[in-house]
Image (cartoon, rainbow, N blue to C red; front, side, top):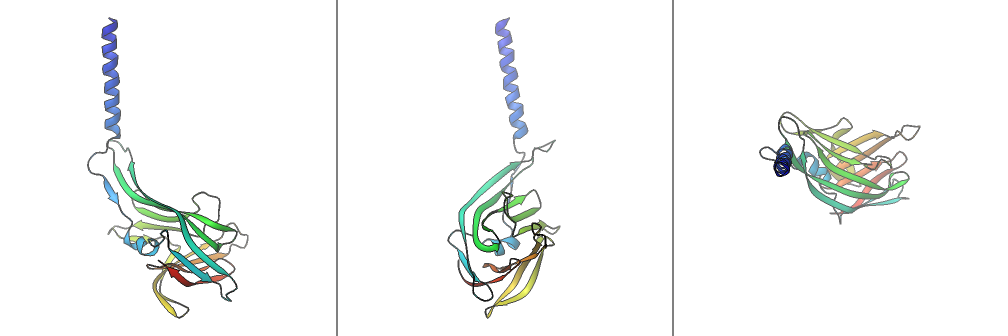
Length: 212
């Protein structure tokens, strides 16, 4: 009798493991999402070894922007949505953005460049929740599979800085909720270059040189 009970218990445990594994198993192909071209041309340049140098309007302040602690990894997600398990994967980037004046009082910003199922990418600072957020950029997928940016973004056909013309510049505008004055901040991204100009509420900084 005891031997029979042990056999039944073993079968029960085996069936439980099989059922749990089948529930967590991806059904069919795993769809992989790559960084969209609409975002990569502005944010793909944020790589280790690259740097950007800026001066304010009277050249009394200099800002050097660079990247550290860069990590890129592949993430696989099992949504576990009954009656099947829908799985997808995507690449994700984490790094620290060093800058002296982009926001006042904070020299290092954690940046997360990632995907949220199943229709949007974000390029976001302040993932630790401790520092002011110089930008929070979202691109959402449309019905024709292209991506459009959130309402805080608009595109400038051209922007001239120090006699250099930059085309298709992406402008991010936001308010500083942590200041009583609710001052607006502006960050300008140029394709394949990165940030070329920014306003932090006090000063406007323009790019002087960069290395990619």
